Image: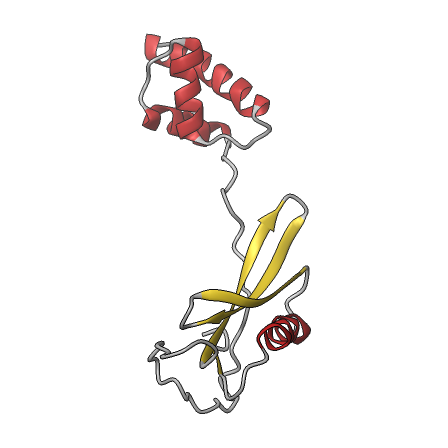
Length: 160
């Protein structure tokens, strides 16, 4: 057995130990850094990645991706009163809505917001564990109660 192969076996053992200590979250960049910083072992990150692949080890993905909306291609689209011109001359003339998701340890939370284009302030919001129409309506209701606008245009991209 070659010296390189022997060293790869020793190195693989250290890589597996670090990987297990991280509870399977570390990928090759973190393991490479720990080998250098804590163990004084200087090898390339590509070598660590190769040995991890050979051992069947894979680091955790940073974020899970959630599909928040799926547009219905057959649905009729409402008229775009804004025509992609997101500019307002005074407060409460144009509101835009958006939804985002917030990753937490126990799953995702969905945040619906209504933004006044003129002031760039959030005038209404709602957060919940689901992505249903009620969530968006709660954010819009909050904005209406808070601001009591007259003749405001409410624009949403409908998840597109």
